[in-house]
Image (cartoon, rainbow, N blue to C red; front, top):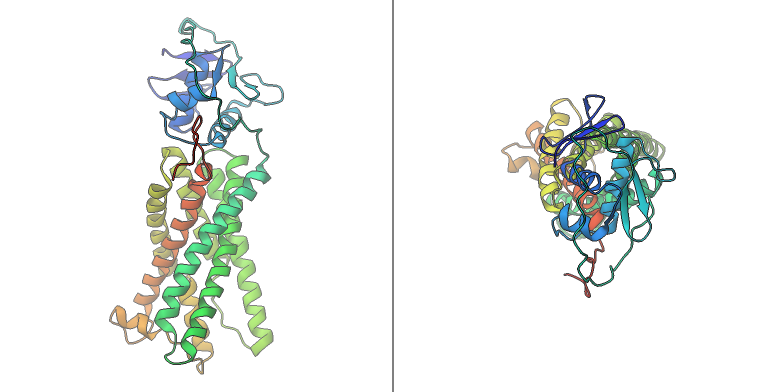
Length: 366
């Protein structure tokens, strides 16, 4: 398809570029394909099945993925679903591009091929959701990812540092419950921030800023509550525990991973792998700059209460240190951050595909 113009926009499918008044509009490749299809069929209905066949290339996704695609396009075009100037919703069927395409480069309208008989779609196009609804959906997925990371981390720490004998099982249970609860809460809040930010501001910065802000808030609140609780119960509390700065870095890392996954159309598995790498780097940065995550905070607690039966020395011996030193702290911080960011991004990236039934399918794919 040749370059086309409509309103203040120029669409060049061959150059893979959409511009507004000469400035490039940042949208993902898949969303650009969807806009190209709509413009090529301007004035005509583009069904959901055509989007799935020509944009998603037969990759099974839910209607929510198409809804999110059109929502993002409308934001970039400055369109309004209630009073559309560009993309009109045809309820229960699909979408239609209604703006006038001008200029000599505008392609001729190609008549669509005769529709092949297909089974009725299993689901219909859903109404667009407000940003807070996207945030709640992100909170559920992010919280689930955080809980998985907390469960794994708690078991590793519990098995590594628990005392031998009758207290081992109790210490393991306490650490698993504590880390799971903390990570679930942090993942839920960060997931809410990332998805709300993406809904309010499409592109890379919406999710990154939303995740960073949410992470800073939950990190600061958790640190404040934890220190106050220890001070009330024991009369003393260690300083420099995990707080807002660590939460900000991890939240921004989650937002970056989600943006990369959405931009590249990655699977949840690939998104998790790349996000885990971002988390490893974030954890290393935090350790170098004096930040602390679960392992470092636990080490501070044990230093403040020398009578405690737990010991992080076994983790130090794994890297050749007699105690839990700087190398062990840096390694555990990197692994913690990688695990948390990877799990949260995996669940957020998989969100459109959860509970999916491909259009026209009669059964559930395992």
